[in-house]
Image 1 (cartoon, rainbow over the protein chains, first blue to last red):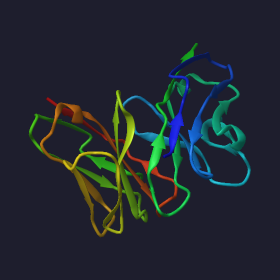
Image 2 (tube, rainbow over the protein chains, first blue to last red; image 1 turned 45 degrees about the horizontal axis):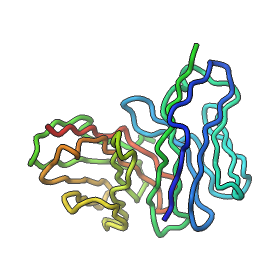
Image 3 (cartoon, rainbow over the protein chains, first blue to last red; image 1 turned 90 degrees about the vertical axis):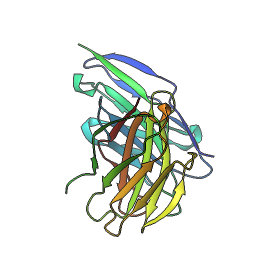
Length: 115
Length: 112
């Protein structure tokens, strides 16, 4: 069974500081990997995804993530955080086929940004 | 293109009632999935519909059901509501199965 772990429930960073949110997954083969962001009372917005190819993927809002197969990780990074980045971030794994559309999510990391 | 839309955005029901939530996918998207989000259980997959057929179902009781219409719009129904059904229900669509899912704003259901 697939699973996703986000070890950090809360993270606080200062505006302008760098950010790394951790994500570890368990999946039988090479998965599809996603990062979504959720602002209070809102749905999920796709930040970036990894399907294949270059293991460093770029997303919206200056975010990037690196797929490391040996570590079963897909950590999200941003070099300089803005106050508007405060939100909850979810890592997800999906099936690599047209046999299923189920996403399995981690528990989320809530990011707070100090001025 | 317009995004995924969900109606209504907010609902208040009482225990024992039933509720129907609606989802309109992005134009051209044929797969619709539903998720439940609660503070205790997080984001959990409910079911997926493709070509008007339920393709996958998560670990939820039979009180949770859904359907998809020929225009790919989907509805989910929860019968005999329980307090624990209070949640944010998210709908997501993708062009085909196994492709990137795009989420709607959700319907927040409160069961009293």
